[in-house]
Image (tube, rainbow, N blue to C red; front, side, top):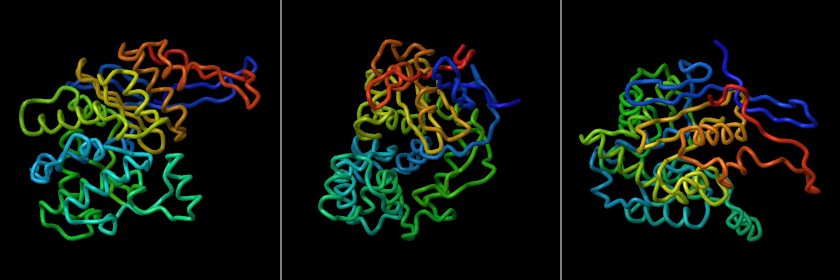
Length: 328
């Protein structure tokens, strides 16, 4: 079974580009709706950060460190490296008597325009606090201090990462076939798209046990602190704000996107085969409209899916469309 045709770009009355992909909507019992191959093995990349943060809470490390919802949202974030993100991670580490050198995520220029301009104009280099994964890594360091592990917490056999792997396999309901090293140097375990969707459904409809309470805290942190999860102008933040905090949404590199719908007890997961971000953002938008949590006339829908495409002179040149049959 091939991946499904999901998103198209039209110009001059002709289909210019096509994005194929796979998508699932799940409840805690399994797949409710699917397009393409639910059994496709994927790397969730940053879309699974809320799973990676589960041991942080379940171990008691988050409470021992007195973490706030803002910090828990950062633990699930792929942030833009704005001052609100950089300062928050810096303060978090200082509270642990740690600092930027203790991170193992590496440096890159921030996506945030203002911070990028400040560094460029000041001839400054970015530090690891600017890394979009620095919040996740601050969470790893918090867990590591609690577990009294060694400093190389990104090694696959480190206690931090073995705890993450165990949580990942438990919530996806699968034994992972393996891992790849993510952009931030941490291992990223693979699973089927259906497994990722089931995991998101578990976060949407958690139990009352310790894990369920941890899931609820992370989802609530994401929904109430959308600016910390991504940043201004980013799809995750824009979509969560548009839905009034009813849904948690999270992107991952190479065109993975997930959503957690607590009111409906549903989880969504999708992967665009060519890795195109524009298609992933359009596809998740279409699915959120399909599920009734995002109004089809909301400006966010226009931004990521339905607004006409214009050239540099403002002339309409084309449009993005969902392929026939997606969503049903």
